[in-house]
Length: 507
Image (cartoon, rainbow, N blue to C red; front, side, top):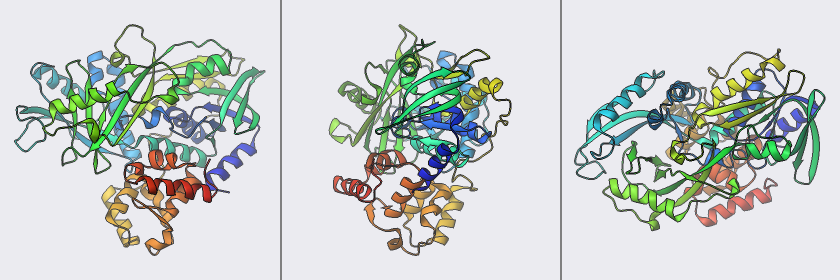
């Protein structure tokens, strides 16, 4: 039996009654499960698909304060996000790292003074110890933007591997005793005395567990869970907003990102991505339908290409798109407003009297604030759990993040495993941090890692992802636990699928 299965099976078999059952394996669900488990509560998390299968792996890959939210006067959200940016950078230096943004000035859009004032607020509204502040810059002739763009601003935010942020929170929760059950659907739940009676389905198997509290963190499905699985009225409606991204061949040298203003007052990020590519996004459009089936539209792709084509000297067209993805953001319903103006803040709804088992539902939220959201959720549940420990996640690294600097860890890897290629060492540090020793320990050569599938992916790494991180399919591995789908060709990707099937891991 694999380690993640052992942890899950042991935790699930140990009790019939849990303190918390959490529905949803996106960033908010795993964040709450992790925080609760670390405070001594017994936790079960169920997710109908893979961890981070939807919204939490379809983001712009940023930990940021949200510069554009200042125009919406969302000062509390920006302040909280800026504080979390520093905390998360310290917690997870392997999957989160600083990024400098260039904001070119277009005279006919937001005026120069407004951008300067907004960046001054951005620098001073929240905690900023690790990242340099903003400054005005002059664009030289060698920059990749149009020749007539000569003035710009530069400021800091952070990049994040979004799906790995979810996986590492789940791993930390499991190591604290939580039962993490991907590919397990909550069919129904009802109050039964002082407990919730929760019906769970995994494959053809259906089981029931009891919980002293139920947390609904189902993201785009949150209202549907309340109404369909629980048979209760939802206290809030959700507005589903589609955001799409495209991946192009690398448009420019350098590690800087760009934030581009468009004539419709929206902004588009252009980000260095996976060494050889450029990520462009996002869009904002209302979405109707099953969130699991969302895909970028041709109009959205044209929109993003047009913004890039307007600012960059290099010509871009549809044939250059190497990958595309879309996600659905579950935002609080604000009828009539532009989708890009709907708040990205979160709302917690607590339903239940003092003598009833509570239901806590999460509406909205963003990657950057997941940890604070989890703390707020547990504070709301405190009256039902007087034995719960204090907050702890601000100072505890995520698994693999206990190292002084990426360069120091690169040097340590090079000394311990000199036969690794520089590209492998870099990817291991940025994906796993110290966790890579779990599949490298004892290896004396590349041959000891087993089959090479391309892109530096080995059988040893695949074994680790299945054993410790709940991966089962090639999509889990190539597009969520890693982004190697961009680097492996169709034959290599098929071989990954075959290996998973042959080794009993596919599911």
